[in-house]
Amino acid sequence: MKEQTLSIVKPDAVADGKFGSILQAIEDSGLRVVAARMLQLTRKQAEGFYEVHQERPFFGSLVEFMTSGPVIVSVLEGENAIPTYRKLMGATNPDEADEGTLRKRFAKDIEKNAVHGSDSAENAAIEIAYFFRAIDLVDRGI
Image 1 (cartoon, helix red, strand yellow):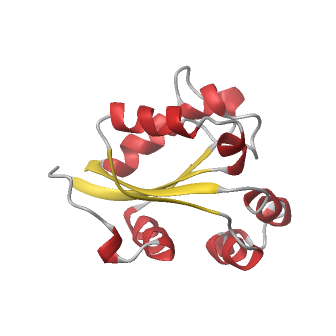
Image 2: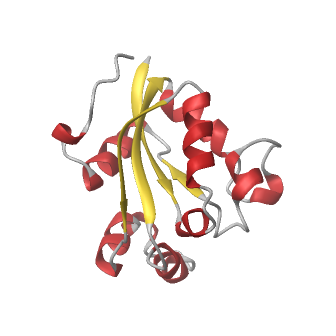
């Protein structure tokens, strides 16, 4: 089933110049980037995006981290894009991630874990709409 998911290359991976390798790995996996942009999240934007976690103890440090530098947000499209990208990302904790996954290759720790991806079709729709309008998405003939 063709679907879309949101990807964020987080500030740690952008600062380390790893975003090109990450985007290449995404494309090599069979997913296609159909929209992308680099931006610096404001505190308000980060708090809004991660609102679902606001009661969790890591919320404050997550917002601080996500506003610490530029990120690259993109929409990925392909067959079973959500599970495909989640497998490519690897476990949240890079110490537990499988070899070859993005987090195993590029993450520094459980918080500075290089990438974010939507965890469900419902969240993907919400997250994509948070950063992109329908007109921003291009058809790459997939």
